[in-house]
Image 1 (cartoon, rainbow, N blue to C red):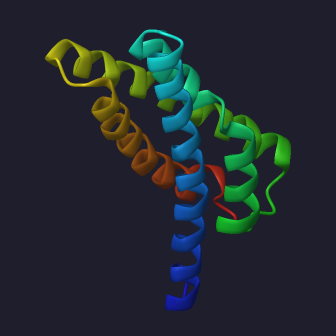
Image 2 (image 1 turned 60 degrees about the horizontal axis):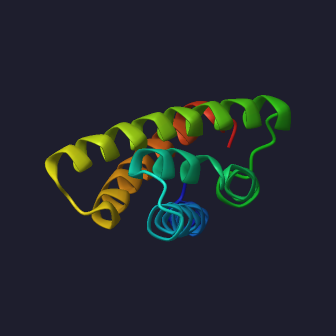
Length: 128
């Protein structure tokens, strides 16, 4: 992969990831602060809601994958479910430590994004 392709892939991953991350942050904070839903439930739910738009962006823009959509969507949804469990668990730890929910949402979400890239590049969109 040449350097231009690496930059393109990084740009689109960040674009899709930032889109999903911003949706996650907005939903988790609204659920927690406006609707008074617990931090862990807010983080878990907010991680799952952006799956359709971020899957499309990652598949088409970042990885330009030709893998069958059904298979890659199933793996992507499973990855995001695992991320939701991880993020909710990290949120519970942050809550236990007394961190503000907004800060925990950012830290836990960033860890989820990093893991997500590695799994997408090495497992889900391997054909790219």
